[in-house]
Amino acid sequence: MADGRFILAIDQGTTSTRAIVFDRRGQVRAVAQRPLAQHFPGDGLVEHDLEEIWQATVATVREAVAKAGLAAGDLAAIGIANQRETTALWERASGRPVHRAIVWQDRRTAAVCARLREEGAEPPVRAKTGLVLDPYFSATKLAWLLDHVEGARGEAARGALAFGTIDSFLLWRLTGGRVHATDAANASRTLLYDIHRQRWDAELLRLFAVPPTLLPEVVDNAAVLGMTEPALFGAPVPVAGMAGDQQAALIGQGCLRPGMAKATYGTGAFILANTGQHPVGSPSGLLATTAWRLGGEATYALEGAIFVAGAAIKWLRDGLGVVRDAAETAALAATVPDDHRVFLVPAFVGLGAPYWDPGARGLIAGLGFDAGPAHLARAALEAVAYQTADLVGAMAAAGTGALATLRIDGGMAANDWLCQFLADVLGLPVERPRNVETTALGAAMLAGVATGVWPGLAAAAAACWSSELV
Image 1: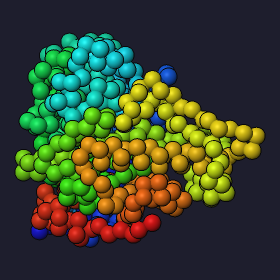
Image 2: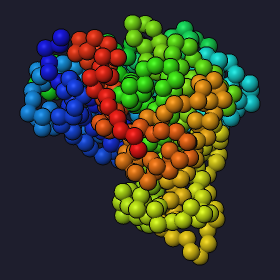
Image 3: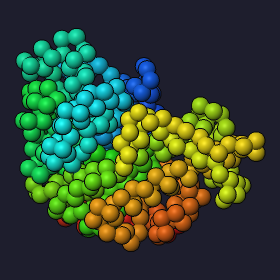
């Protein structure tokens, strides 16, 4: 058993950075959070400041440890869960970012993806990566940075730059630049990684014009990757688990057997179904992805991505001013009759699975003079459920079989009206975890398994996970 009594998880998301301290039963002992500014330099462009992410990471870790009444020596390990596909490029010598991170939502490379599809590149890319050619993923974002940051291609060719998703950037900074690595789950979201052979692929690198000198080492999701710089938190702490946020939530929800599925409702919404030791392809726009890799053996998932879920509620609040708080939407929706006929297509940054239409834009239909804030609130919530139903149906058609239940998490899972409507639309029991911090918990479980807090993921899930039907 590890000496430390607690595990800290860094949950670096699209709109905030959080640090959460868990005990060995998976109970939250302290939480610290910082909002993350969103930068929109143009239509369809979304960026994050990497230095802001780093400063918030250090600050939240220190705050969470202090709030829990602990010292760094009380921690068995740190685990990292991160917004996936968001692309970072930095100088190896200094660690300085050469540009803001390009966020997963960003659509600036839509034309590049369209050209590659027209040239017939998508079938071989999909066969290797399980993904479609879409600006969502990291490869075209990285190529854009190399082509648009002055001198970047030359610097990359001579090995002076490093690429990574946010997990990799944080690991680099936490270890003082000693470790440049990413986990197998995050690597599988780049369009550069062969999920069958579990390695970077030379043909994909040539297709996207990415020099291999940029790439991090790919490691298991549960492994001691390096020690934090002692000066950061008062003592070195092992970083021992990493996963993209959706894979981390799949673990944190205890979906460890084939056929189990979870849906996470945050800025976007992501449904993952465990498919076991073999990736499942789908003709309907779903993605095969690495769920996790332990001991060199990969477990796979079938995934559907909804680009806009909670972001639509944020738009109602901040863009239109029709609600003051996201929590109001449940009560507002309950005041609208079932036959209200107002529908929202929340394609603000295109449509994800199963449509993959980067050119789509949002639409409100069915407005009458009786329509008001309550109608818009209900339509936005219903849109989340309808998109979920699309994905669940596509998963069943792809061969996962009918789900017995759907486990849900994320900020929108606190909305009782949405949860009930979701269960009604799907015709399925919907389970909500008693501990809603499933993304961070998954990262903590991986770090705990690597450091001996639990003997394996099944034991970690048995110790940490419980739910309620909604």
